Amino acid sequence: MIKFIHSGDWHLGMRAHFLPDEARVRFAQDRFDAVQRIAEIACEEQCDFVVAAGDVFDSNHVDRQVIAKTIDALSAFTIPVYLLPGNHDPLDPSSVYRTPDWVDHVPVNVTLLEHPTAIPVPGAEGVEVIGSPWHTKHQLGDPLKAGYEADSVSGGALRVIVGHGIVDEFSPDADDPSLIGAEMMREAIRDGRAHYVALGDRHSVTEIAGADGRGFYAGTPVSTDYGELEPNKVLVVTLDAGGSSVDRHTVGRWVFERPSRDLTSEADVEALAQWLEAVPSKQTTVVKLALRGTLNLAASAKLEEILERNGLTFASLNTWERHTDLVVAPDDADLEELTISGYVREGLRELRDQAATPGDDAIVARDALNLLYRLAR
Image (cartoon, rainbow, N blue to C red; front, side, top):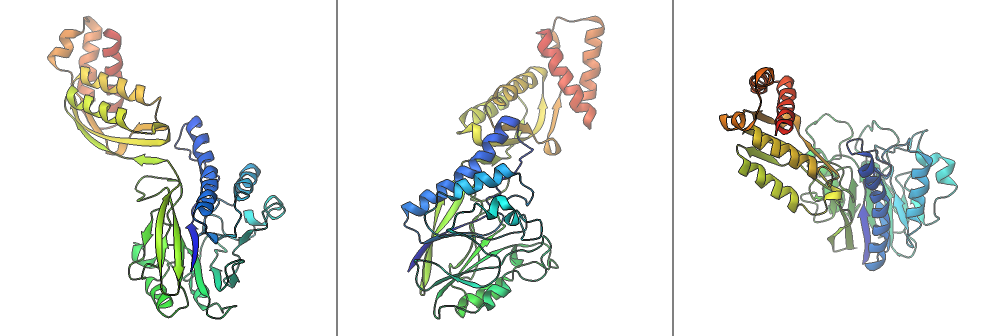
């Protein structure tokens, strides 16, 4: 029996242009901290080795500091670590893994899976790791096929195949030449050419149906985008010839939320405020709000104040303009409250009419109405 960590999609050096500068720095650092946390879990769980199934780096063109910080994070491991080049960091002529900054300083216990050949794991007798690396961003053929066909170097060994890409059963593009065949994987597991298939590329923890608990995507250890299911995890796999067990361990802290809210009154706006206030770990939470409905000026101004105030505490808080349809319609109470007259009142009425129409001009008019309302108050 062996125990190892299955991870992948670290995306070190990810730029995260969608975040403000301060949050972007924390987001980048948390990815390196996650690698060190994986090393701690490996020690706590007494694992024999670690595999990272592709996209260790977000790009082959990361700067030297990213490479140096990656090597520093990897130095925390005391067991063998196997890294697979994926579609973001393929082993092409410009590969980050070919640079002197990497080659001259990478820890000795870190092995790059450059070829689909069996590599015995030191200290874990009868265990082989076989990687199927990407050598180009445009892979042709099932990237795992060569790994299944690799000769064993220690007969009867447990074989851990490490691959990266989209399994055909999850892809909307059946003609993609780089798809991983689910049935081919299941056959390899059934006939003993693979005892566990460690996959990367999909950022959600996902089990491959029919693989007898021996085929998984580990997801990403730090969430990267909306729509990811069970991100922020790594898998601790216990494996023998008879079967496997897979335990999820939380590593990352980042959360991406896209809530939808219907707003038709100040009470609805207050309910949204309460939801925002209750969100834990705001500094590592990215929120994109889809807002719909009709608000009077008072409620709209209150909404703007709430979003402005909470925007100071969240990593990022914005409205999802493509899915936002919020109309500002001043009512009689709004007009009575404002002690304005003449051209200003006429301008208010024009803005009110414009805010009720569709399009970008309505957004500008809504913002102008809110500003006018707040100034007049």
